[in-house]
Length: 260
Ligand SMILES: [Zn+2]
Image (cartoon, rainbow, N blue to C red; front, side):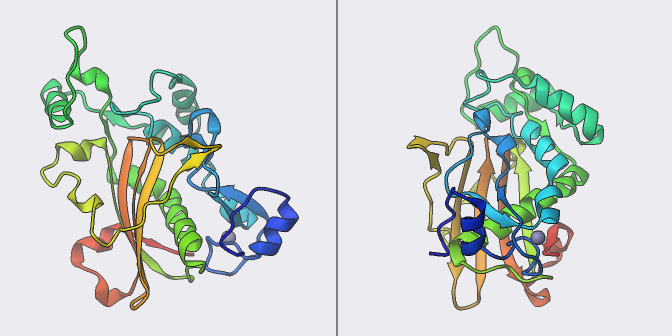
């Protein structure tokens, strides 16, 4: 029953999942950690089946990044929930705790218009394209969020393979904000044939896939796992691992995550 990531008592949970799935098998489970973080979800209602075994250290290490991604993921023109919740508390939290990690919005009307057009969005006459909040993140901010991406990969890998990713495993990650819609490559790299499994993301029968969704694939022959995902409509990504050095292409080396 190891694949059941169920709610219920912590003691029972620890019996089923005795080892933290985030740090290579080195530590025992001390808590349940929601991945992706609750900060992403409307009313903090995260999907069922997405609580994972964590040691104290792994559970706590993403706290500030969890808050920053709660803001960044909400900065999207396509977010269904944008008109139902205020972004101000998120903005204040990040301003107070990690001010260098505030996303920069697209301020060029030409660039903003191009994005809207590519996304097939028709704005009404009283709106400006730049009001649609197209978030741009620099590479440093992505690196700040890497703790979340790494935990997401470890968690999804654990959920679907029932194995803990070993210490030192390398994961290639490619992530972007909604700005990727303006790039020529579009979303091709999010829909590899390899990614055949699309779990249902829901809570009490309510579909949460607008807030978090992913596809995954696993090759039992070479042990390679891949996941493409989006966090609300603000962050899009693809991660592949575990890789060995000889698998790596030059461009991958900048965006490697390492399991501690
Ligand atoms: Zn741990």
